[in-house]
Length: 471
Image (cartoon, rainbow, N blue to C red):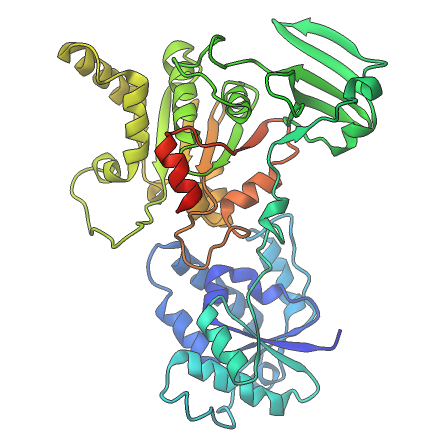
């Protein structure tokens, strides 16, 4: 591959501060207008402002002790690797051996007449065009998260790309679903040396065979036909695995706070939610698949009935679907109430608020208000949750860094449940393959104390199912 020079747009650095060090042997060029926009975005406590300040610290560290001639000649990026790995992205030290260039002289040339004015985007395009004279032997590529800027660049003949380094997967279809289908001849090929035993009322099986290599820890294994045996992988070593018979929470069997599973995926979700050894659960699914109802039922059962957790923490990202309604009065909990409509609707179903006397409903609400707390993600930094059942709704709107900030709040005895629908991302510059929820599903895939399931079938109502399918 020939040497390339990547021109970075401001939104790339705002999205990922370590983007400077993510282009391996290639060179980086930062236009002056990008530095201006970074300076304008450094104030505040938002994630973007923190990222901007981090970028400024990186550039300042690279420039430390350098003369103007050395800056003009390009700053070697490999010297910045040490302070990137010291706290920004531990365990994933980037590999950069290119150089960082700045716009130290006015751009030469001019844009086509159909791009008049001094917009920041047009200034970046002009800088990219003028680089062809400076780096005549290299390929100039504009990197931006802004689709419209990439379109304009392509129109005037500049190669443009999206920033894809933060992609967890190339295609969402490759995302782990949490369950796998067993072949019809499974028992013939794997049951010859099978061992079985019971421990604490649970049935376990140890078996060996070629299919084991395709399994993951805490994965639901099932046959194509319904109401057949369902197994959960508990241990995997080479071609040997320990499987546990899944609990059955369907109608007519045991329930969780009065809730029964209506399909295979819901049954597996309840198995994960009720398992004290699983600290991290992720549930994906479209509207009406039961994510919130199942999670709340499991939370109430383990908090009020079993006293496994001291209280339930409910939170979500406050990204509006339509126009923002502005500031809301009241305490943190009162401000979050409008955002928690989905959780409160399910809570009414579970507690039967429509039945009983006024006194019974008041007593139930009083009890729940002391055990269920609504919190904003904006005030999570620095907190530690001990023996809490934490429910994070609309998790698809979080970046990987925000997700890390929230999950690391968990202390001993805390269970973290992330709910989301990757088809409903409302955060700018975030896609299905770069969402923090996708990142968590992929990174926690083979940890013994984490589980995931994608809920496929809607169970809300025939109207909701038909609307999801046809609209």
